[in-house]
Image (tube, rainbow, N blue to C red):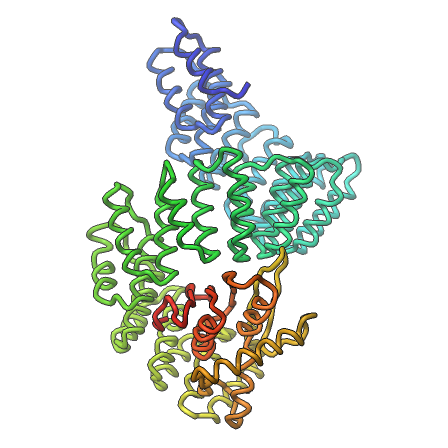
Length: 628
């Protein structure tokens, strides 16, 4: 009946417990996500002198696999051999356990010794290969099954689909899908179809995932969740929301996974109104107290630009874990409230939650983006001694950013020289960004050269160095860099800004004229430009990376994507409504100045989320205090 608590109560009241009752209780725990309790019961069973049998060991091995407890699994294996219980079923369970515990050699050794390798044991071995990054071997074993005339089952197909994901091969996934359809005698069921949706989603093909979903004769909650997750993880938040709304119309009851996924989609769109409606549904379902769902709500409000709602949700959470604290500290850090983020970090420790590596990345980033140099250096120095956390390349990257933004470029470069891992390109890219801020041309050139030695296709390095050259008036160097990019086939990432209005994403590029309301948008921009000039706005033409006259530079600046998105929002939302804009690149200095003025002219708050942080523009000011 699914009530493990009641089962345990009955079990504890039994005066004399035999092997059957022990097995029943251990199996119930192992199958219902209480693996640790299953192992504790097994130890108690031993202490009471009750002999385990095959059923006991199968359940205990399952518990070891779920906990990824290799040491315990090996001890159980030894006892199985000692008691002579090495059957084919036991061998299959051992292969599965070793695979899930990350010990492929042991899984292979057990598999090779099996007298009869049936479909179940081969499925377990395929799963072990897939889980441990040996997709090639998994496919070879499947081919061997096929050549031997062994008929695959549902589990075989799911294992191979997971293998295609691990190999990051959409082509192999499609080929295998075709193989399943061509397999005589095997009828696609909802479990395999859901696995196909998962595979296509993880391999970046939402169209193929949706094609499978639409053809399903019977869709359960798991398949709905898989399709919504496929959209959400591929940044197709609009489609995820529409599908969630369809799910509601078909009266499919959402669970925790559904809500966490759709909240993530709302966060990606900065769709605050839709996020609030989903929050209401969560409250009605009685899931607001679930810590995972609560964390997702905090994250959604933060990424939608509503720090107040994020904090309100955090404060009423009955249970908080390190993820909860990281979410709220990151919210304050990214919204430009570095000092408040540090206060929350102190409160986190007072409440008995130990920080992890992610927490320290957030804290160092908060210090960097709010100019808290001394505090950031102190936290970095105490990472190992106070928190037992060894600095990772991400922490060193934050330290370089902290020093670089503060103008201590010599020290920042010294640290970049010490980073030797695969993250070295990130370290040098961070230093390059600091060189742009402080107009250090020669150091910037050195940093860019380091980045391009490691990653010749890194478009960001070319663009930032071009920015530095343009600011110094070195137009020949700008032209040379463009030629190098062209020769190497490096494509600059297109900048765009988006706004979510009336259940639809509206996206704009620079000088975009593709929107149906283009004329109204440009008319609104002209109106705003007049007011801005009257208020003293002077376009910052130093930011234009083209060697053209001042008039042309001003014209180029007027139609940046964020300005177009704001103009669209102003003519399509009620007066006084907060506008929420997402920019896929860093907001340029000219747009930052312009949006401050626009917020004052129109009397609205404008929240812009770029790649670095959140900017809350209100009454002519920005929350970042012009430090970003």
